[in-house]
Length: 420
Ligand SMILES: C[S@@+](CC[C@H](N)C(=O)[O-])C[C@H]1O[C@@H](n2cnc3c(N)ncnc32)[C@H](O)[C@@H]1O
Image 1 (cartoon, rainbow, N blue to C red):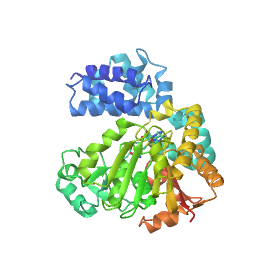
Image 2: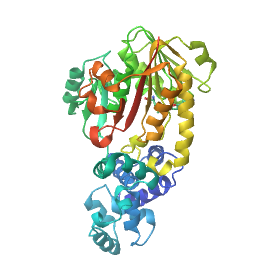
Image 3: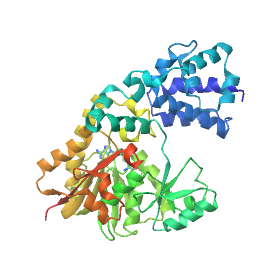
Image 4: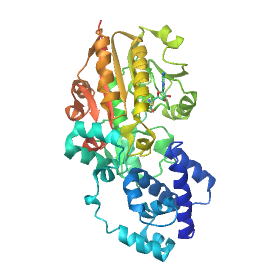
């Protein structure tokens, strides 16, 4: 495709994505389905350029002010990830001149908001919590993409075996620093045709998610509930940890998400998982199971702001009002899910948010309202689950994972035991 035609397509794609009326990954996939003739490299260029614009929108919009022509074209030029030669071939002489000038701007001299590329309502609490140095390290890490994290299905294979299979396929994978189940791959190799993938020996899963499943420490023959199972990323990890025994209920209000769990379940070889759509957190099914469950994971709906490396559009699609609404939902789900536990049972509340409001605030309110639940020290729990450097993953008794500290998505987890 002529470079200018590709740049035009990128302009069109950005126009759709920047409406922010749907998640960016869905808009990009739909665009590729519509433009079937695009090759692998062209898709890569369009997707990477789009994500670069989403990550640095304030900076690029500010730099784009000086140019001419459609704003989305100027943004695409500034963030172009399809190679310098292609870009040169696409630009008109005045655009080339403009780009040369913009590249001379000293970004370090610009206002903080143009450098951290976050909305103020998000930047403020993070700066207050982390202090200057760490805040800027976080902002930098969220401007980069994430590595490809894999979880080995220990029911089917050992980590070293899968690592060797990947190596034979030309894919270099390293054991993860913290999760005993994980392998990390640089770049984005296609996995879905590999024997290790089709046989169910590996799944794509961020290391942070693996650590949350490890914190629940589900055991053989237990009754376990994954209350907000979604497409089942953590369900699959829990089912394997239970060695395909016992009973693992995968609940969610979204039937559509639970549907996506089915092919993954089939690959995984698990037969101890019972997916069930619930109407809401006080569904009759929950009442029937009250007091009967050994372990409950609440992977609560949240702002997702810990996943900005993968979903940079979330910082422009979320709002303080949405966070307030989520808090009410999180409290209600946690309260209801807690009723499921037997005395001596374990409860884990988790989010992929960076905000105290969705994390410590919810956990502390729950502890105050539920003196029959004893908070457990997260570092001790993770250590027992064979997680390396467990203490470095925890703050104030909670799991607190940060992209800039741990090279994982941002996650939080609080752990309790129901008193006997
Ligand atoms: C963070 S996602 C779960 C991700 C999933 N655990 C995984 O590892 O792939 C939160 C899920 O909570 C579900 N949800 C929202 N409200 C709920 C409710 N009242 N009860 C149960 N699940 C709910 C959403 O449909 C969504 O799938």
